[in-house]
Length: 183
Length: 183
Image 1: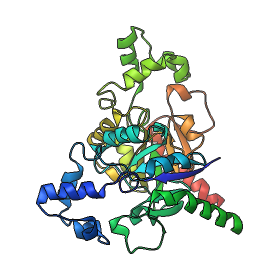
Image 2 (image 1 turned 45 degrees about the vertical axis):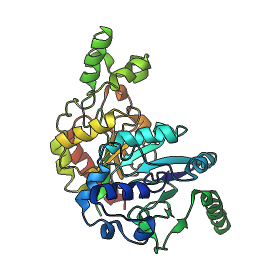
Image 3 (image 1 turned 120 degrees about the horizontal axis):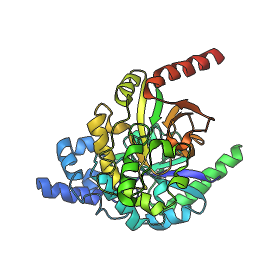
Image 4 (image 1 turned 90 degrees about the vertical axis):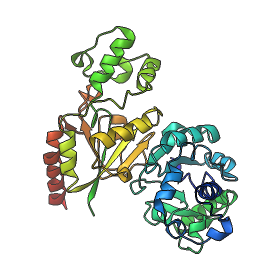
């Protein structure tokens, strides 16, 4: 049986940072760049939680996110050796549920609906690996956590870091080999 | 930490049988009663898969399902001792995603969005117990399977059967005590 990989959407398959910054500017008139936000938590950066909720609950917000560079070709490649599950914490933004389904159907049509999970928290998700940008998911996941770089996790170093999708196949190969050599 | 229970929606929290039979009659003119369908698989009963897809993809179908008798009070009671997760294989019917969220918000408002999982298959869901009517989910679940009675599982006896929600607290208590006595 193939090993399983759970893959997060926002900040991992979908490049959400620019989109949030642009919408934040539209809402507040405040300009923030990717450089400005590096290393800051979401709470530090956006203390007005209601504003972020408003942005993320807006129709079309999730439907129109750009795909993260390298995600499509790497996920396709990984599917040769792994069972891939998309695991997105979408339930806080109920309007996003159908949009996320549509977004995946457009950009990742080779992923079956059987392999999509939209959830609240990820604590009962059990995959051999979890690729996610949030430590709140990675710190407690049942499999091996792999941290996809995002502004809010810069400076954290307690998980394997992924800077770009192109690194993933070699990282997984290395982890599998290390595991075999320990067995 | 509380033990976890995953609970299915259709046929477990939501009483889907009558609703399907009524809609089937409207579509086909064929009258089927609960008695007629007992012990038959969904495939035997509805060989025209496209028809069932049409029924289930109709706007409002999942939103308007009645609540299974005893479900609300029992789930509320179970939450005192268990962490409850709603786990519904909703992804085949993408229109149902938001409807299922709304249905839960109406009938089970005491369940947090954090504890809702809408998925394709349930193979990577890991809870201590899974209450479900489908053997395709129960046979391979990671925790202890508890089979909620439905027309298609009559005659199957390889899982603990639940005939009514009122039986669940005592069933769980018995299972916990049996486990303790073995420990």
